[in-house]
Every structure is written in structure tokens, then in C-alpha cells.
Amino acid sequence: MAEHSDSIAAQSIVLIDGYCPVCTGWAAFINKRDKTGRLSVVAQETDRGRTLLKEQPSNLSGLDSVFFVDESGRWSARSSATIHILLRLPLPYRLGAIIWMVPRPIRDAAYDLYASRRRRTI
Figure 1 (spheres, one colour):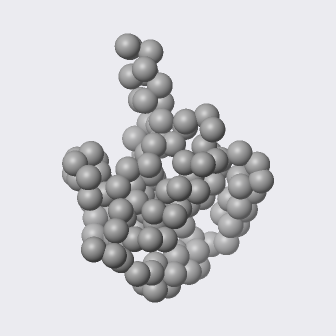
Figure 2: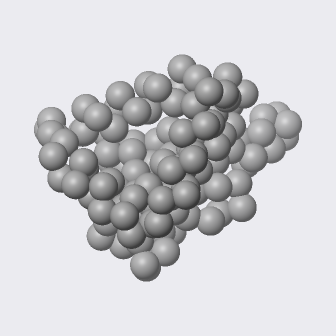
Figure 3: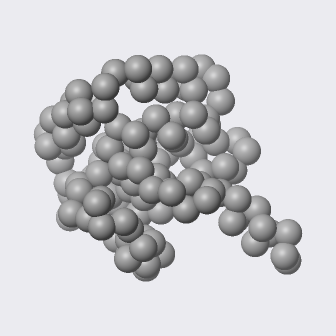
């Protein structure tokens, strides 16, 4: 039993908007390709998601974003979260992290533009 909890503790967490079709599609993409179980996808609207969001750093509060929490508890959002997720997927998906070369304000502006056009289903 302890071995199971240790492996869960070693997982990174991806917090998604569970009402967003794009986000749930992204979650399915991650789950299909994460053969090693390094990522745990959690909808923000679930009990676990709400609990995790209470631990969110204040500088990320209020963002409409996917969030990534690494194995050591560091949080990232928007394009940085996407890059961290891609880095934990196998090739060729990991290569998508090359967007790291684009300055973060430009990456985040593109992320925000895309996110503002997605549709939520409630």
C-alpha cells in the first residue's frame, strides 16, 4: 500500500476546467499518451480540484487557465503549464516544448486569446 501512495506523490498534477470541451479533450490527449503515469489530470470542479486550488499561489489566483503542479509542489499556469506537461510526455510530443523559446508574455497572450474563445458547457 505504501508503494502505491509513493507513486501518486511522485505524480505531477494537471488541473483542467472540467466544463470546457477543449480542456477535457486536452485531458484525454494527456491520459492516452502518459504511459508512465507521471501526470494526474484533475478537474478543477471536483472535490480534489477545489482542495488543490486552495493551495494555489496568490499570484495565480483568478486565472482562467490550465494549472500544472510539479512533483515538488511548484505551480505554473497558461503557456508555462502547457510546456511542463509536454515535457513529461513521450516523443514526439515533448518536442512541442520548443515554444519555451518564445518570450512568456507573447506565449501567454496567445494562450489567453485562445482560451477566451473556447466554449464552456455547463
